[in-house]
Amino acid sequence: MRQVTVVEHLLLRQKERPMASGRFTRLLTELILSAKIIDREVSKAGLLDVLGATGEVNIQGEVVQKLDDFANQVIIRRMERAGVLCAMVSEENADFIEIPRQFPVGDYILIFDPLDGSANIDANVSIGTIFSIYRRTSFEQQAVSVGDLLQKGSMQVAAGYIIYGSSTMMVYTAGNGVHGFTLDPSVGEFLLSHPDIKIPERGRIYSVNEGYSSYWDEPTRNIVNYFKASDNATGRPYSTRYIGSLVSDFHRNLIYGGIFMYPADSRDARKPSGKLRLMCEAAPMAMIAEQAGGLATDGTQRIMDIEPQELHQRVPLFIGSKNDVEVVLKFYADAAKS
Image 1: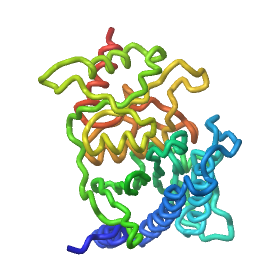
Image 2 (image 1 turned 90 degrees about the vertical axis):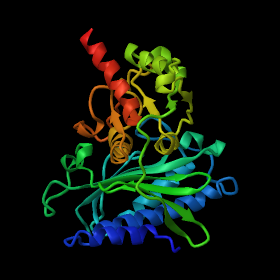
Image 3 (image 1 turned 120 degrees about the horizontal axis):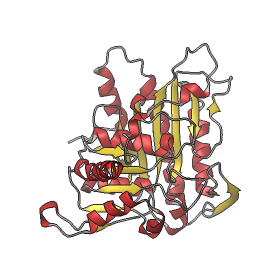
């Protein structure tokens, strides 16, 4: 049986919307090509001079890896010429990126983390590209402003990620379910391999860096202790699986069920809300989780409802299987009452 490519899948979805212009398909097609270029470099990382740090530090205060910088430049250079964007936001850039005047401009906004998990690059651990797509809120004749970009997650047109692992896979949603496509290197195409992904309502895995437990608040410590406690009725204790790459940990839990947690901690006064970025990490993953039947919260508020105040805003993140995330909400609600 002939397998459906990701572009064919997009075109089939487009036919369901008679007013569709084809620009969204063009956007994702260009993004997919960027992913193929990044995948080519990742797969040859041990043979080329693309491992290690560049010696620079990004807006997040993190050391920039060579592949980080390569992926960032590939996406920016390809997408600015696509003719469908008015602006981009990258995790690696302090300010938003306007489309140069010599290129056609559209009304979509691309927000992305070019290479999530880059601290694991040298160890050959799975890494990935996370992306989020919005439409601008102002008229096309006006200059793009930060106000066009600071939209809550529920306004996303689409979201997804590409994971570079034992196989390269693209997972995305445009608000009509979550679909996974695996790259077949023999033909150079992403083929539909995981249609209509649904995350199990309850998992058996919890993912969190327990090395920071002394910096957590009491509800978070109680939540982790809950998942570690024995109870046959709820399938506990859960197993700990933590890679340290959001894309990798989330993808595993999306397939098998479970919960990923990156809570706020008191280690760094500059990051009182935790490490993960709302707009380029938490919001796109939250859209995927919800479309697959899961949940995402900062402990008290739905991630998709948070109004961003700045481009690189950070939030705590609890995301995964519905029943497991509801445990988090209960513990925080009980703590608020006491």
